[in-house]
Image (cartoon, rainbow, N blue to C red; front, side):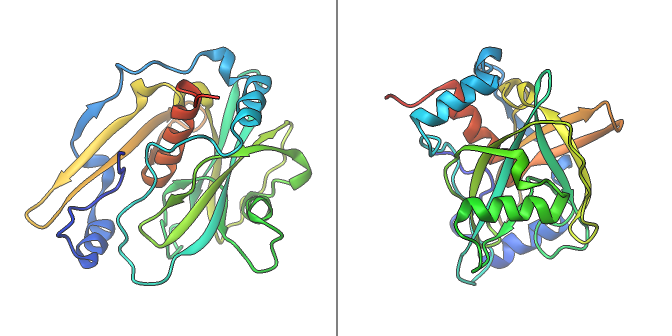
Length: 247
């Protein structure tokens, strides 16, 4: 299995913390682009096909990437994100730019989501609550169709990606304490491995490798640098749709 954000086994947690805090992931060398792999066929990205895929395999099959090397000693915490698929003329994925003031993964691109609260009924409820709190996406607008395999982040979260279909129009409001921006990326772009880049940073202390999917956003005129946990979960969605599990 691949590990999208890994340190060599001899590297201590302190090394991971240092690289996490000082490294600009955009500048690391690209060592591989997966353009030899097939893109997911457009017909498989329609709402009816996505529903059928998750009816057959509600937990999204086997992951290609499932964890990062931890850089914290605290016990793992359960969390959930909402992989919100917006049903426009072409399916889009709803993403956020996390606030620069957050403790974990500040400034990064992410799905709406967060830690499971004791009051949440289940992990689906966590994803829906967090989406409402972060971007104002009402839970009644979301049709949950399945989930992807759990993903363990280096910051100590065991994240369940909940997949849901969302019917526009949307009236979203970013929570300024958690989210700087809300935007969308075409699902077809993310499900084409010609846009999946493996980057690697090697130093005398450690070696780190991760997946990125930079997207030039015509709406904002800026590049959305999708990498790390978010890119890894999208890669697991790609694997599930492009190479479905045997029935």
